[in-house]
Length: 292
Ligand SMILES: Cc1cc2nc3c(=O)[nH]c(=O)nc-3n(C[C@H](O)[C@H](O)[C@H](O)COP(=O)(O)OP(=O)(O)OC[C@H]3O[C@@H](n4cnc5c(N)ncnc54)[C@H](O)[C@@H]3O)c2cc1C
Image (cartoon, rainbow, N blue to C red; front, side):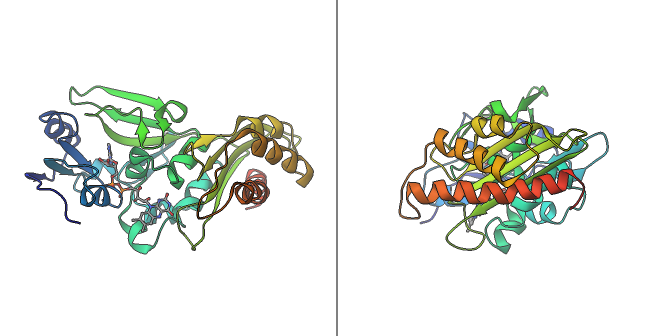
């Protein structure tokens, strides 16, 4: 399919210019385009029919990873840059785990962290990972006002976020807590495909090596990116033993809705939660101990 007629294409070079163009249109009549890996398909299928496309790729301020004063990642930072960023270690290593296995090379070379999170597709990896890491989303409106939204409040459900129609996501920020580790792993029918199930875990360890803070999130289930509070509660105080992780993942299985579809039935998805949970826990504990 070809997109419906698009009257205008704009390629602004500053944040202010980008939001000003969008604010000149009714909501939905102009859209931002990042890597185009989701929105181009949506335009071709005419799920979205914008009059104007505002291409963000010439705005330098939206690109790159900075670790001065905490970790900040520009909305237009592509998967390929995140996948190779050595500074994403310990507490934020899950971002690299996810970016290394999103789609194929083309998707990783064009797709962006901001585009993925703003689209918030039901099975996407980055919404679940940024939720699991407790990212903060920074938004700019046409009046020049900025606001920061916690990941727990940003993702409202599949294809829905707290971003206002005229707001631009400028960057995401992340805590860089010591003695912390995170990991993300997914399973799909094809290597690097969208997850049938994915699990993200971030934890901090106390002086005795026990879990003193934890966030866990899931991808691939009907609710989209979601926290797993039952698993988080069960992991508090854990030393990372297989038994304690098994108990935590059983609590997750008992508390989340798993569906059956042509990719996998509900029992298979539950088993994936158990298996992937053990794998991400082993990696996250090792990273928190500084072993990886
Ligand atoms: C073949 C294929 C395989 C894929 N496999 C995976 C996978 O394994 N895992 C996975 O997670 N995803 C996968 N994806 C989806 C991929 O991650 C997309 O890149 C991502 O969903 C969208 O990112 P984008 O930069 O291309 O955004 P776009 O498609 O350009 O934009 C998406 C939406 O976000 C909005 N937007 C973009 N940037 C901003 C901004 N800064 N501020 C406000 N709004 C903004 C746009 O207006 C649009 O509504 C796959 C896609 C394809 C085509």
